[in-house]
Image 1: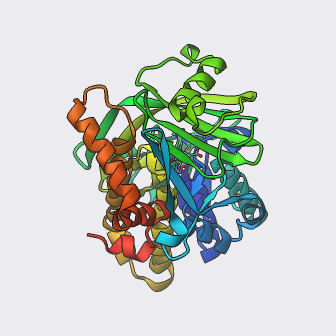
Image 2 (image 1 turned 45 degrees about the vertical axis):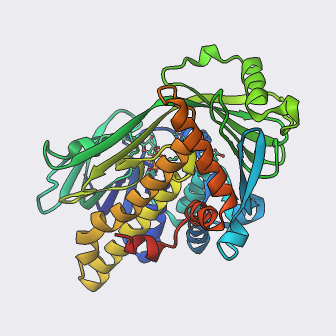
Image 3 (image 1 turned 180 degrees about the vertical axis):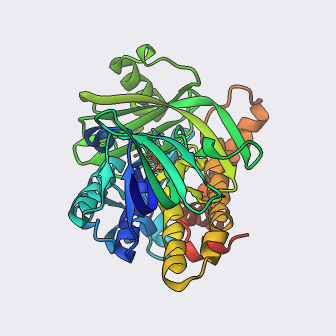
Length: 400
Ligand code: RFL
Ligand code: PHB
């Protein structure tokens, strides 16, 4: 049997950030991860970090490589009616920017920092069941890499095991409410060895569907196309992807040019908005995708996961060192204010930029009017910009 203060389930951005924050405060934690280290370090996902996320990673001492290798982005383009219009973040948010740096690079940096700190991360060790969540101590049963089962007794469990994890299911029936919206389309994403299509991200609304041009480095591009909800990857050989991207970007009609290159990763992501409330049950605290999912159009999922554990780490600090448990008691309410604001922003971006087959031409006209307004009114552009770069923590916490 292992004993710790906080058992963390999941070594994604939420679990790893929490483990490092707790270590720096002086609270003992053990991280359990069902996958191997190489698997979590190579899982291609998010790419855009809010400036507050970058600040936190740097404050924790996990930002050295990020500072050297990441790309600073001062704006994005919204493209519609075959024309790109820029949203200038720096100008609209008094100098704030976002950082393009792959989620798997953040994960690698956090794991490296935790290894140096000596915080145990048990890979290939799935949590199997949680117990005693309302008792004196929580119990967690796991199976280790050799196949042996064991138990951890912890003061608290942090459920950072993502959308498909098991922690959320440990809540008794009726203890939580779920709010969910599933969109009638998915994103087909590729990573390719080719120069980025443009210096900044381009979010494209096209009659054939949404397209997003992003990047990971000056030689690696990350591209997404809206596709039908139940699409099979086999439907999308590389040539079809590149041809469709060119059509949606208007490459043959003066739009951004696309240089095709070898595709190193391809995947389909369903689009959903999901929130479970409350994010706490007894000794269990849910954080990140385990508690909520946003559609990726606002580039917010990883940032929100890290914002949750920032609140949780502070609450644990007050609890253990100042005998003040109000932060733990308020955890769910505090996080949910930011969560719902982020849901609002992500749903708005998603509705504005995608093709909805069931919408009538009137609604499509409204969508184009919204895009024109956002790219011509400074007030509207500022609304997009301040949300995209990330609302200040204190202010988002205060939004009610
Ligand atoms: P994760 O990353 O899913 O990590 C959960 C971890 O828990 C493990 N696990 C278990 N471990 C032990 N025992 C069990 N029983 C377990 N069950 C599961 C899993 O193996 C995994 O390692 O959740 P976390 O930490 O909450 O992080 C959330 C982010 O990963 C997610 O929100 C983002 O990737 C979302 N996202 C984006 N977020 C951004 O902030 N900016 C972006 O630009 C952005 N783009 C994206 C995205 C997500 C995408 N996909 C593929 C979903 C683009 C895409 C295409
Ligand atoms: C990415 O680079 O993977 C990315 C960028 C912006 C998004 C989503 C994903 O909105």
